[in-house]
Image 1 (cartoon, rainbow, N blue to C red):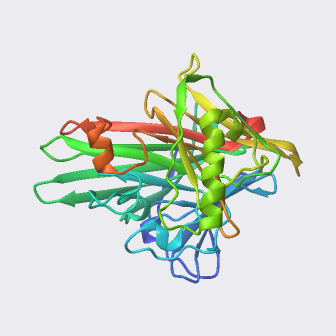
Image 2: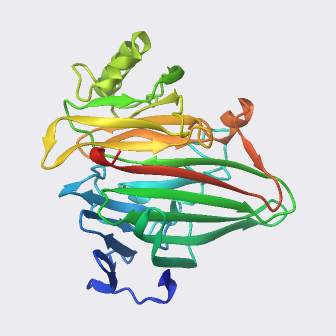
Image 3: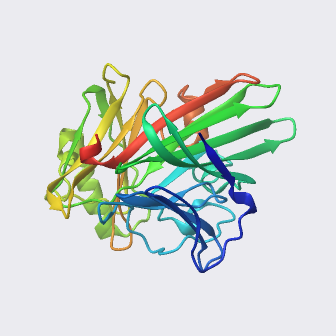
Length: 352
């Protein structure tokens, strides 16, 4: 039996309040001091904190006593109005759908387009049981439309299962317009790097794309260091598989693209295996389906303020903006009335 709670009707206050409990599951509703509503959903192993009305971003995620989310300058999410960069430091955000990636001078969209901070009028908390066991889930529906151009619904869902130290992320887009929808999608999962860790992954279908994208005019000592590191990766991209390797530089960031072969069940994975356990945790992983999301973007940023190991951001295209993707035939189209879904899983290693 499923129990679904409409959280659009819930009153969120700064003082946390238990919204619902069932067995080892608990959902606590609260409002950050910035005014952003949040729902902390937990089981016996840990929790994820989701922003149900602003992009359904997962702001924080912890299992077995370890916070997994990237480091940033933002302890709390701000109520973003233009772009996610106004308050970036989440564990996961959905990116797209009418564009994706960093805009160029030829683009008219903001970074990663509307999905990261899109507003949800419908959001729910659900307790249930399926063939895999008991779970608690949070989801919602957002609608994005522009007269004569596009009209779609986006429906994400995050599932936490009994006794598990992982979350299952699914997202479905439905084209409500009587025209094909040109779309792009990327799931931005931001783990924190651990020096000495190794990146392990599914076999590659072809060599990765190593991008030289240090911003022009960037602080020269950092720019020079990052460009030297990119020269190393040009010679051997495997150098990126050691976190904290001698000579590495990810200032402000490096964004490369990997292509994995799926296993017999259709999944590919990327792991960050710690050199020794951090508490009870020996590493983290991301799983995805290359048939749905063939581009495994690897985004790493390592500065004093931002420390992020986006070791696998599954996507439909590269991260270089709509104009670039169109020029390289990476756009996709969704027929009128049709839907497309994406599936990602992430958590700590013993769950993989």
